[in-house]
Length: 315
Image (cartoon, rainbow, N blue to C red; front, side, top):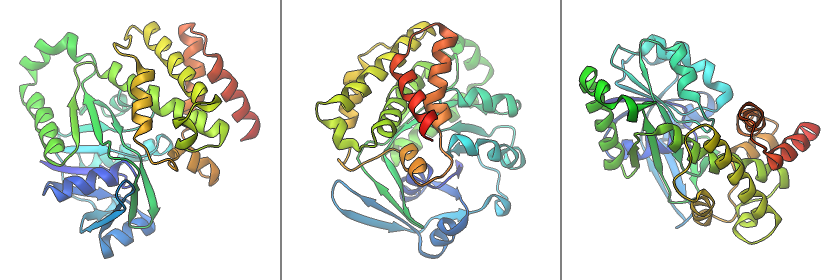
């Protein structure tokens, strides 16, 4: 299968690196100095857990010069850049192309599906902690690397989907195999709404609390007010999931603390780094949207409201 990965940072770049290493047909869509460095020197990944660095040649180009027709498009940009990907996908996609958004913000797939009605747009999320260190160089903070993706309402529509789109289902399974063969834990979900909310229950609280307290993973890895705030916001997302009809089936506080424990102590979130560097950030989709969801579903989210109020005042 031919893959186009839009975005070559801590999400897309990491996926492209491991899939290229596994001899999959992958093109990274990037721009600027990062693109130039990859084209000239290849893509380097520094692994913080063992101090090693590996550099491999990768296929990389900008949107303008990409002329292939991919079987799969992995959308790995920040939420505020999502609109820029739609015209590109419309241009390069064939009728059977599958689009998998791998973003932090919940509900992205459904929004993209409205703009790409002739294509299958799944929902998706990723568990990874990585970022661009410098052009052509990514730093990966922990070993966890998992992509979860699936068709919305697949559990209730499974029989009909299988009869009408057997080839599409086979393609989704082939994508999982490509992930797995690349050392990426690929999960083809039958309840992607719940699974995406589970991921959101980590990335949103850790980003919100990290920005609120201006701290690193180390501060959440030990007992204290930062860790308690993180746990409280996880429970508030869990209450939202319950109200939305997709209750979590496991203790997400316990699950997310385990994920947190695997990170390097100095790790921060991409939202923290973007805000501190004065860049656009995903604060609306990761923090303010939770407050709006609380109002929509009549679920109290007092910790999120407190964090949102302070961030609105200070940013």
